[in-house]
Length: 251
Ligand code: PGA
Image 1 (cartoon, rainbow, N blue to C red):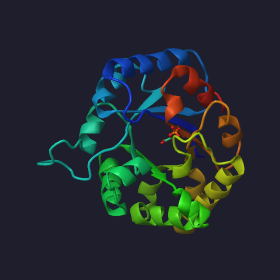
Image 2: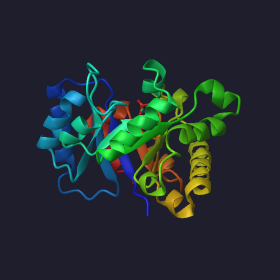
Image 3: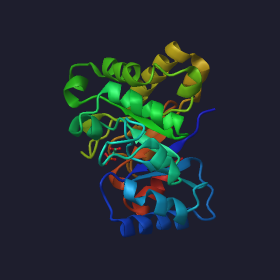
Image 4: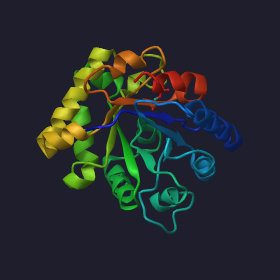
């Protein structure tokens, strides 16, 4: 059966020293605790190796926030999936709306990234979600379906089974505006139905679908109580142990 997961997405925040402190603080807070979900932290590339070495990665999975769409070679400034894997990170966040909007990542580019992540043994946390105008026009179902089709539905059932999905309505990211539990459940159920149509009910039932967008200690319990919401991808509230731990403990 699918896992409950709470994953942090630090974005472009924290120096290496601050990030190490945050990761170690979380590691200490989890010490001796039994939590009912997998815990993951997504950190800048520069932090991955140091953090993976400093914490118990069986307790806290480490994720990159991106990887290149090319295997290796003359791509100055890029970081490959193999490089990410070599740090000890086990996950990579792909398709985040900020990458799509600010760095022009297209469904085709993301398709390549997913394939390279999988080829290097990384678990993609693949983000989908509509912008406000699409939600207001009632197009959110079509948008998330197209995002799945455009970057993931080329995968074999076996490979698709390795994917974690994160539904993140763009209008809720960093805005303090959250989807209501009912809105989250409605679209998560739609996503699962779409997966079932493509890959069958068993794979659909085994896929973790996280909610992201202004998720915090105050609303996590209600959001996670939905049958099709399997956890959260947490931005702002993942930057302090005090804010992140109650979300982890919401399960
Ligand atoms: P937020 O970000 O929790 O700060 O809204 C979520 C995300 O972008 O993954």
